[in-house]
Image (cartoon, rainbow, N blue to C red; front, side, top):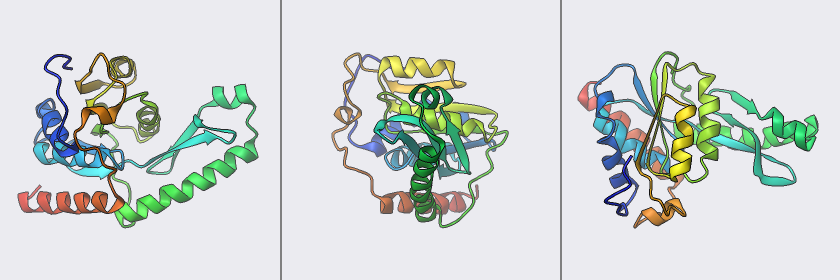
Length: 225
């Protein structure tokens, strides 16, 4: 992690190019796959996967918000049919099962929509026994990434590596207890927000996600990977 020589990334693609320099140990390996959290993590993941000559896919994660407090997560669902419930939150707030089921159904519809849109009904890749590099464009509270890690573990990867261009110092440090490796290229002391560390931080569109996944598939085919 770097705390000196701080600068803003031009955009997510430049951030991915910088971040890939920290991950060269995973280049040209048959057991490595890059999973990006859509949508903002995909341009970053595209650059990393291209540099490492590794497959790229998306790991769609949908937070399950408490019905009367949407910002508070009581669990998550993710690519591959994974469902994670935070029993502590559910019990503490006495969230009834019908309410949980309703939230799951609503988020499942959105997850399936994104899966179809991004992956064209292709199955989620088999990551069992593989090194998974889980990528996002930044870590603030880390709630989405934390949910993704918990969900990904149910797919039994051999190793989970979190990679992000910029993150809050405490958040990046906290993940060291949860995964095998954490790579935060920059951990500014006065972090404030992810978008402040990008000159261009426009929302990544669904079409851009589709285009980058298709472009990367073509790139690997041209390389014979």
